[in-house]
Amino acid sequence: MKSSLKIIILHLALQPGSSWVTQHSVGRPATLAPLITSRRLGKIGYLPDAEPRVRKQSQNELIQCVGKQLTGALLTGSLVLFPPKIYCSERLILPAFADEISILQSPRKESTQVSGTATVEETWDLVNKYYIDRTFGGQDWDQVRKKYLKSVAKAGNDETQVIKLISSMVDSLKDKYSRVLDPAAYSAIQKYDLIGVGATLMPNENKDIVVGAPPIPGSAAARAGLQVGDTVLAINGVSNKGRNAFDIIDQISEKPEAPTVTMTVQRKGSKSSEDLILPRQFAEVKNPIRYKISERRQDGTVVAYIKITEFNGLVKAKLEEALRELEVAGANAYVLDLRQNTGGAFQSAVEISSLFMSDRVATYVVDNADVKLPFRTAADKLAIDKTDPLVVWIDGRTASASEVLAGSLHDNCRAVLMGSTSFGKGLIQAVYGLKNGAGLVLTVARYVTPNGTDIQGTGIKPDLTDGVSLFLPGVVSDTSKVDFKEIKSRLDPSFCSVPDR
Image (cartoon, rainbow, N blue to C red; front, side, top):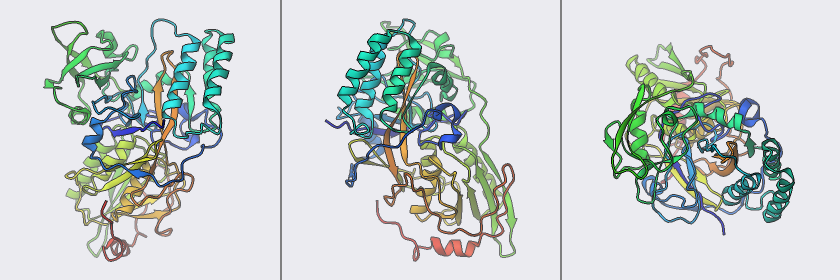
């Protein structure tokens, strides 16, 4: 029976490293994600050709329906995907990481050794439930299980050999984006912890917010003794009763630079509660936004140039700050430079789209049951005048979340694309933490632009190829060749119209 992945975008302020949590949430080209992409080989497996069914659900409804089977799944700030034919009681996972992979399960290494057999079974089962290609690369997946259980019986519990075996099993899918991360590589992802305290939160069957996975070793949550099953009654004094993931994430993201988070915790088995003031720790995160007024033309056009280098945990907040400053400075025309931007957190692309357009479909995500889920922009987050002309510069290294943003703005007649064809990364990976401390990166879904374009392997074609300046890293580019009169005409409803979605 096909499993139907539920996908939920979490609004969290992430932090980058190789990017920001989910080292391939909507993935980056193989050459640019050193840690996470080093094992990419082979080709993507078969994807259904049939037109996906559209499930008409609001994002709030999507939050309600979560995968019953993904009880250990983790929240990673980017996309959280939940599996199959579910009962609609929230089993939503709250933060931990996010960047290019859509879903990250926080580290789950136990103090006791996990058997090699258990690790093979765990890895096989995750692929069996959530992998997008239901032919598993054209092989009998049950036979693969038998083969590797036999092999691991000979290898015993030698950790190095077990990692090699499960890596070989995942490589047999012939999917260059699906791979195993050894414990060292996986633990490095903790730099993308969205809350900054090393805790993974999720609603249980009673809709209480609980600690859903062992805290990251050495983190504030671990030092405070938080354990799986502890209930988090409130965060920073705000009760979690009746709240969903969006509520909590929005609350935390309001103060992304706050030095601490206060959690009111009821220990598992206890009737009393205590306030834990947990210091937040983040890897150094670079501001991904560069901007300035690049021109003040004689016709009154004031051009603002904005460069986004990556979609990390600061991107939305920093872009919003930049846009408001530019508006105050008189900007009334914008150039958004996404060249050489290989991606980042999926939800960041949707959130950024909300700064330019209100209540529009930003993208559709198609799961392994061929169900098509829409993700809409917010209705009241505009940072600039909706009539200000917008140009987006793209090139062959514009990938992943950058393509989500470019496609979103283009297909909604909000921006004209200039430059060269983008990279073409239309698959979404999830990262699952294994009990032995390793991680599994798995292709679980794909996305299409609002107009239904599947860009995997083909990229997004620009509207115009002229008028783009030479890309020079660290240098504000020349916008003088952009003809904003033509841009306005191309965005005019008489030339470009948006169907009801």
